[in-house]
Structures are given as C-alpha cells and as structure tokens.
Length: 91
Image (cartoon, rainbow, N blue to C red; front, side, top):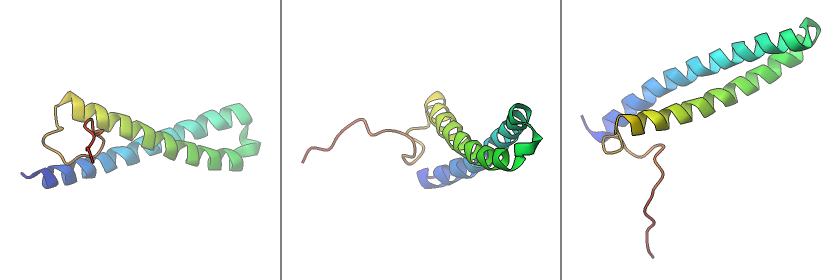
C-alpha cells in the first residue's frame, strides 16, 4: 500500500475513534453537569456539555493519534499528519 492509502485508512479509523471519544465525553459531561447543577439547568448543561465534549474528543484524538504514530513507528508509512517537522528549510 502507498503512503496515501495508509494515510486514508488511518484518518478513516481515526475519525471513527474521534466520534466515539466525543460521544463518551458528551455523555460524561452531561451526567456530571446534571449531577452538579441539577435537572433545572439541563438546557445550559446540555449546550456546554456538547461543546466541551466535542473539544475534549478532538484533543484526545490528537494525542492518541500522535501516540499511535510514534508507538508503532508509522512516521515513514504515513503522509505527515501529526508529526512536527523537526528540520527547518534554509532559504
């Protein structure tokens, strides 16, 4: 498989993982928010939980993606996604 195909599969499975992470954090934040603030503030809790859950899902996705790339030595098998360019071009 080419680097481009490997990258597409990595992104596809990463997107599925990102959706799962986001749902997990949204449900977690809703449960905590309703427990802390009570059911009378459920509208605000739902809105804030949705935004916070999406943000946390993206952050965790990024960290897990970097970890998987470095753990399994995928730097040379994927197009650069999360890998920081360690060499600077000289003009």
